[in-house]
Length: 301
Image 1 (cartoon, helix red, strand yellow):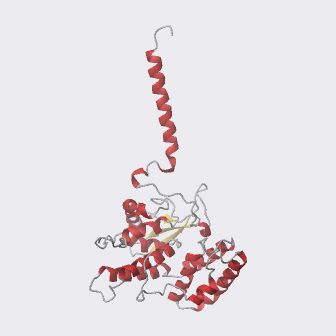
Image 2 (cartoon, rainbow, N blue to C red):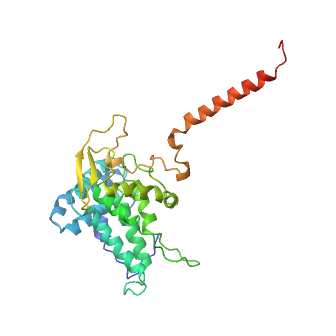
Image 3 (cartoon, rainbow, N blue to C red):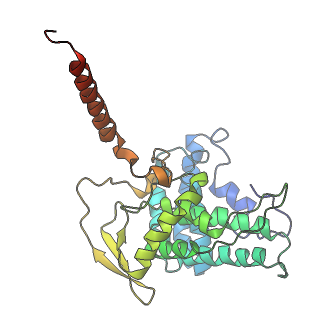
């Protein structure tokens, strides 16, 4: 967790009064009734937020989107329905992913350039922008989000390591985790923890290269559209019917901890279908034992 200094840009955060009015501080301090009251205030604010400038509205909706799935803030089931509404409203705004892209890249540029007038404290600011920006993007399954995160996969630069100093990871490594959490159909990996991002980076680079070139289309679980990028950097939308056996999941449940973790790239071949291979190996072992045993028995046995 970065240490925030006085010079850190706090515009991601709501004011103390806004937090007090909209969000319970903890489920221990505020029970179900208080949580529902806070959710009702938040829901009422969604309508009034439509009058805000675009960037302010994205900031407001993005802040709500990141808090609603957290069970240390909300535990009442109504949070899922409101999450779905907030997510849908945010996805309907052109530029919903580019907003976070601009913030992350601006902080990245200051951190990368030692001569930048904003270089002091830029490591903390960059970590902060990545933490909140990538968390929001992971809840926004759209072609715009895929493009924003996919382009970051080429950003390999990372600050030189210094003893006793924790430096942010490269944009390329950091972008893998939110990409893997977008519930993309037939994605290179399932959702994965941070420590597996680096070794799975080549899989996602290969996937995005095919997607960016337009040679491969993609879709999201639970959606009825498929997308294909065009040479001008935009995308076309194709209506599709998902396979009957596809896992369908409401957006409000998209961040469930029950999502299986990705295996390292070297183990990906086995994946979730390893049991047939184990059973086949057991049968082979039994056959070998039978041949060995009966081949050695004396006549008349």
